[in-house]
Length: 462
Image 1 (cartoon, rainbow, N blue to C red):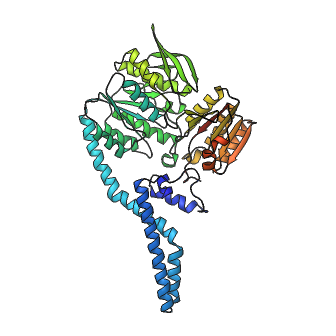
Image 2 (tube, one colour; image 1 turned 45 degrees about the vertical axis):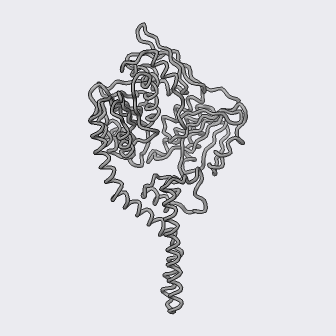
Image 3 (tube, rainbow, N blue to C red; image 1 turned 90 degrees about the vertical axis):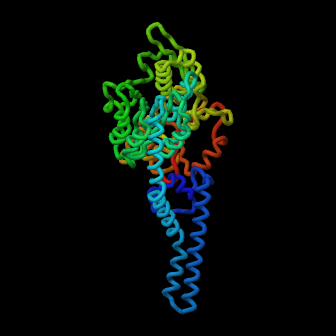
């Protein structure tokens, strides 16, 4: 049940994990079971199913002994010892059937209802897509635009059809702006979401290797993400032009933004640190000074875009400055906190190569008695796994941390190869018990340390 929860109740990755695992003596390396309602129900059903199988096996053994039928005794013993395998597969088959018979038809009905609601809504509908940075962009737009308009946005990282439908039903209808985050997990997702939401504006936050187990190539992921542009009026697509990967997908009618320029404004006097980021937007004689609680140079482009876009939509400079001042780090996204006199920067939500680049760039600029970098690596990198993780190692080495802590898994050797290839001379620690490390971090750090923790690695990955 824990592993099913880890893979978002998808039977195929659950069974891949089941048959790949050789030692079931310990499963929860990185977190523990969250006892949601569905988890509690599944745990009860699994227990009842396994108990029923054991009872059936005992009855067969008893009947075989009484009737002197050795083959029946054998079948009974086989039924008893096979209960974990049978239970896992019955559970997976049950969930797969439930998806086909109930969940997918329900989502199709929800999509039709949501499509009608969005179609009839008179406000601007802003769709946000990309390999990374979607939730941050959504929250920035929500925070700043709310200073001058009534705005609604999808909650947390709820970014699939079912959550879009729930969000649509929650709308009052008088919102001036509606912001919808688009997740992408497999080809065709973004086009589906676009047909449902029918956006008037789109923001594409970036492109990086992610979900390559489904997309296979970065180009395929890019085609899916940029398919959003086909559903948006000309001139209303805004793209983060900083990552090189987006350049092959840019069109003349796209409006680009970066940490140096956005919508005709120039970015100047940038300063960033653990306490936040300051910069100025300059356009002719106009000069707007902005301060945000977000940290890292990678935040400047999104912040500058949100400020300029908000001005374009009619907010005053005072409203924009006030809104930007309210922005702060979001949970597990470059979120700083203190522990034992040290500063920890928690950037563990998901992970991608551009996020690694941004984090190591920040770490290189910070001053500390000791710099510590912690990561398990990246998941879903497909055939590019080795090359990408060697690049990760080189990026870490360039930041010159005093200590690098890696979580033992299938990509650890590739990160180490990248570190050594880049001439890293600091200490490398490989942890084989991530849960123990994270829950006892206070005993590892000392006053004056800066610890950057990046990316997550759920237990269904080897």
